[in-house]
Amino acid sequence: MHFALLWGLLLLLASHRLFVWIALFVVLFHLAKFLIGAFALAIISRNWLGQLEQRLRKYADELINKALLAKEITQDLQQVWLALTALEIGIALLRNRRRIGQWTMYLGILFFLGIYLYLALVFSFAYYGVARLSNLSYAWATSFVNSLFMPFAFTGLPPNNWIKLLAGIHGFSVLALGIGTILGYIGQKLDSLHVVADELSGRLQQAEVRAKLAAMSEKFRQQQPPQVGTTAQPNTQSLVWKLTGRLSVPFFLRKQ
Image (cartoon, rainbow, N blue to C red; front, side, top):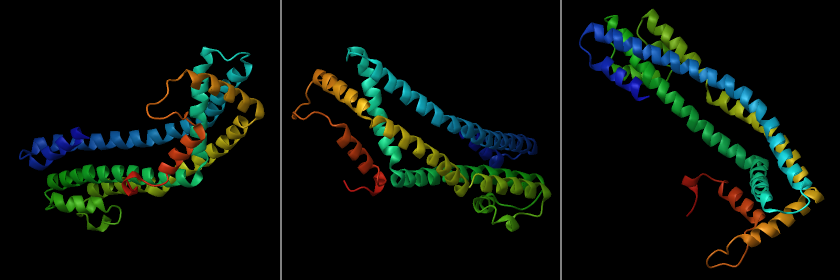
C-alpha cells in the first residue's frame, strides 16, 4: 500500500514528463497486480472454504475417537480434553446463527470499505496521470471524488478513451467485489458450516461422549491450581454463554 501511495505522490509532484510516465506505469502495474491477487484470492478461498467442512468433521472425529478408545484417563489425554472443550465452545458460537450473521455483516462491510477506498485512491492517481499525459485539465481532487463514486460518476470523467477504459475496469471491480457479493458468498458458506456444527453438536451430546468428557474434566480440573479469590471451578457452559453474550453486539456499542 505504501509503495503505491509513494508512486502516486510522485505522479502528482513530478515536473518532468519522463517521471510522470514511469510513475503512471508503476501505479498501473500495482493496480493490475492487486486486482489479479484479489480475484485469485476469491477463487482460492472458495476451494479452501469448501474443504473446511470436511476438515472440521475429520478433526472432531479424531478427537472423539481418541477419547472413546482410551481405557484409562491418563495425562496424555489432557490435550484431547482441552481440544474438545475448545471445539464445544466453537460449535456453540457457530450454531448461534443470529450473532454469527451480525458479525459477518460487520466484518464484510469493513472489508469492502477498505478495498473500495483503496481502489478509489489508487485509481484516482491513474486517472490523473493519464489526463496529465494527454494534456487534459483535470485536478487530482476532482479525480479522487469521481473515483470515490465510481461507477456512478462515469459521466464526470474527461473525454479520453484510456481514462474510460480504466473507469470500466474500476467499475467492474467494484461491482464484482461488492458488499452484496461478499456477504452472499460468506453467508452461503456459513450455512454449510451451520449444518456441520449441528451434526458435531449432536455427536458431542451422545451419552458415551459426555461420560468420557465428564471423567476427563473431573481428573484434569483437579490438577489445576485454584484461582485466587475464588473456589469455583471453571464451567464450560457458562464460558460459552459469556462468549456468545459478549459477541451479541460490537465492542464500540457495548456498555462498559
